[in-house]
Image 1 (cartoon, rainbow, N blue to C red):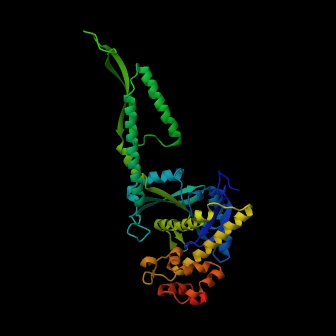
Image 2: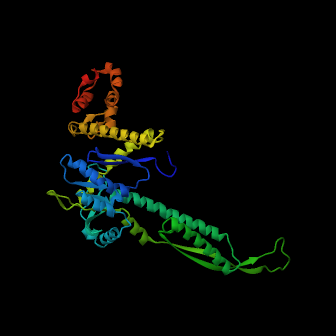
Image 3: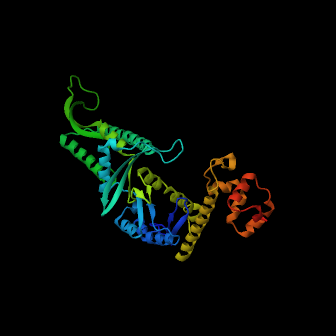
Length: 407
């Protein structure tokens, strides 16, 4: 059942802005996102048409930016928002244009209300990808800038330390002729080339210019020297690494690193609403709802090891988890519909809950978990009915319930 080279099974889910799954499935662990995305778009369309939704915006990760997904989105009458992979030509061109036109960046803005929220600079361009008109949104993130600069600084220091260590190793070696020194230098260079195939350029921020120096040294015989003995002069060759820090390349890398590109087929005027670059970014960041859902589904406590004999049973178990996720998200949404800044709940440890998660609600009272348990579990806690606090009663009222459900 379980393969050491592949996952046993995978979840696929399409959720709305509240994180509620509107389509979900369990499929083989070898399935690629590049094939899954175009395969389910028509299924999502059929489900939405059943509730009279004719078109929609599909937000996905970079695996959705393929020719098949674009054609499938067109057939499903949907619009796509995805992060464009850095290797695409249109992305490289967009990054280059953004670098050459610094005056085209829009004023910095943020998509969140918290004080530490990331600030984004935005620049919009247009491109054609497999015959489709695509809007390219080039973004620069302040949070990503801080993170990348810290990474680049550490890489720069590691490079310099490695070069110093190598120079110390060369200093211990004295070659009898220039040819031996050249051979040793070539072997060192070949060793670096092999590593470059697995990694990026070995020395990203330093320029290394190796040279071979000839030095005259005095060679004395072992033991006590004889009277008036003249030491023998010999010529030895040494490898010297001239290391120069390339500040221009370093600063350029730091400047470009916090930038990424979103690609979308959503028109700027969508159903009478303006979908500008900032709105595209806001919609894309809503993808975190999917990730939060998957953190629930991928909890090792539930799915670390699956001990079932048949693949069909594994699949059924996966769908049971998806149903649990659906109930959990609907529960969470019904609570959030009633909670505002003025009517915030007071959770465990007197914490103010303005946008409470289902887990935070459960922590307000162990009884709330019984809403997801069996009737037997509810009856076993019947003696607690009538002992709810004011905040706990508010939660029940938001769900359209009262204490009598525990009687």
